[in-house]
Amino acid sequence: MARFNDFDRLQAIAPNFKQRLSGVTSTIVQLVPEQQRQGLVIATLGPGLPAHFPQMRFRDLWRLWKRPVSGNARIWHARRNVEMIAGIALRSVLRMPLKLVFTSAAQRDHKPLTKWLIRRMDGVIATSTKSGSFLHVPHTVIMHGIDTERFVPPADKAAAKRAVGLDPERRVIGCTGRIRHSKGTDLFVDAMIKLLPDHPEWEAIITGRATSENEAFKRKLEQRIADAALSDRIRFVGEVDDIVPWYQGFDLFVAPSRQEGFGLTPLEAMACGVPCVTSDAGSYSDMIDDGVNGFCIPADDGSGLTIAIGQGVEITANNGFEHDAIRKHVLSKFTLKNEASAVNRVYREILGRRAA
Image (tube, rainbow, N blue to C red; front, side):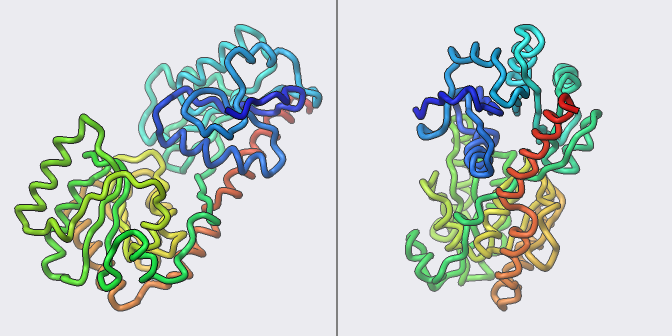
């Protein structure tokens, strides 16, 4: 662990009170280093984060009673209920000089406890206009970004396919993420079973793992694929150490989620120059310009998904997508640098209110 010790200059804390990897954890892992690069002195608190991260310990919390040398309060940036509760206890019970920020990605009406907690925040961020529509307090919309220096198009598509064991002579439709009903994995498999017999030059790859409670779900999909005699063309490859080479080998990417918080995978694929077919779950509809970088259809619409993928296959086969334009779309709106800059600006505005 990279123990954090610079409490005199500490400006913000990013708590992560969940051991298991989640979308929230992934956001912290990507965002904190960029916030640091932009000059913010920030520490993380909690398990499940990389060892090189600037991590303070729970027994260091007492040090937050003393203001930093700037004289300002510090930001406590919560992303879960339990982190909001902890922040309220530190600020309002223990009287530590903290300002509380909460980021909401949920696209549903919040439960009464969450609403009560949100009303006690000093600042609220929504990750999309849709998630913001469920907030009944002033908020700032800041959409997530990705590391566009990591997610890049391949120099050689055939070599990229070979690097992950794919046949360079075949075109590939990719789908990534947890294998589960909410992610629409079954919708993707059904679409592939319908489409692939008419497109012998294409195959489908599904990356990601199925948790123990979803193993039966995955086995049923594998049986469905076997019954269609497509086991050699619709393949589960499991969880991969690095998803970038797989994106670079894909010719078309599909995100068929029924439910999603924000959803970064289409952005990651598009940054690699890959067109996408998505549902309108999460923030996918904000990412897709139909016919330009892919297609977006209503969530849980299996027939619509099949039609849209078919359109994507035809356009891709005819080299109809402008891959440079697909990447530029991400660069213009969804970079990690832009997200970190916007979040840091919210911090400054909140701290500035007291000074004013």
